[in-house]
Image (cartoon, rainbow, N blue to C red; front, side, top):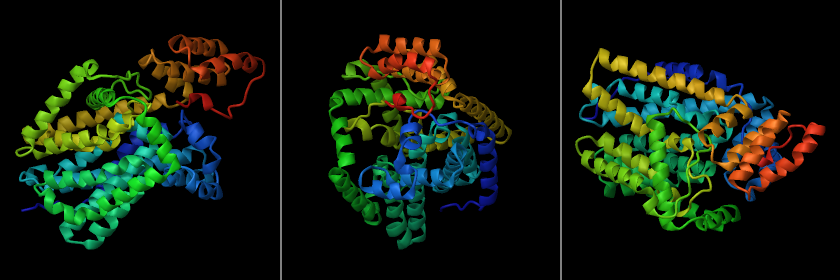
Length: 461
């Protein structure tokens, strides 16, 4: 029989608000970074509602741009963007709590797992790997999409439990549409519904009946993408980027990297220096790692479904999407934002089943404290463009773009000798990086006539 947990929503929200404020208070004073300038600061299409309306037929991700326009027109400056990102993160942490509660209630060990959902939500709230989706303003594309993705999953679960047609056939596909309007990577949503059903003892064949509206949305969305000039041009460029075998090798490398970042978030990096691979022979260790996790997933599915579910969810969110449509940026830490909450859930369940009482509480307290400390430290890197790119250069010293971005930050601060050093380093690593060469040419003019910080076009990939 399914166990019902006591409702403590107010207490859960208080805990989540408290830990998020502790971890992210120092993020509120961070400035705009990297893509923020092209996407927000120097993008007139998000500076007024009339411009946003005009851009509906010209660009992609309309609801994401809606949120940027809302913040811009409120006139609160960069702090308004940060507050919005923190509110999104708070809602996501609460949704993780609700989903963990639903999942734990489906297990035969449900009575022993009563305290697990809150711990999972707290871990999600404080894990430093999420700073890129929260502190970095453009990371909102991931966190806001995740909000509607998880809300749709929760609406579906609630609809199935309550036999509510409104939730199953109305709210669930509606949230899916909204998530797609924020970021197109939400296309995995119908598969996530099937995965939930299977992990909670259901039959995926029976689940297709209440899930058909979401598959219809997926088909219609695919048609929209195919007939949209903005999406189509991006897909065409992406398809020419690498071979299928190269994509597979690169994705396996990225998957292993992200799993390591989650387990040991001591080397977080906004611009990782992972190489573009062209055949599987260059990633055989990552292939062995993936096959081992795949075997573990199948081995655990019946007796420890939380482990099977967690691994299947992570693989679904991290691998298939870019296998056929790769990206210029091979991997980003913010990709774990949607992918990792079932992994945190599985960790908490295992700890609870193997320990009890004081040991569990001590483990939870130490883990939460350590992750919160690392999050506070990571947010300090976002304090300025210089601090962020100095940290990135230290972690990706062989990436030309990183040196160029640091040089540009130095140039804006009139630290011309340091800027010249970084532009030179960038060109030594990649002589074809025209932005670094252009920045080097204009450095003399900048030295004699201090420029205003009114653009950041050279930091765009």
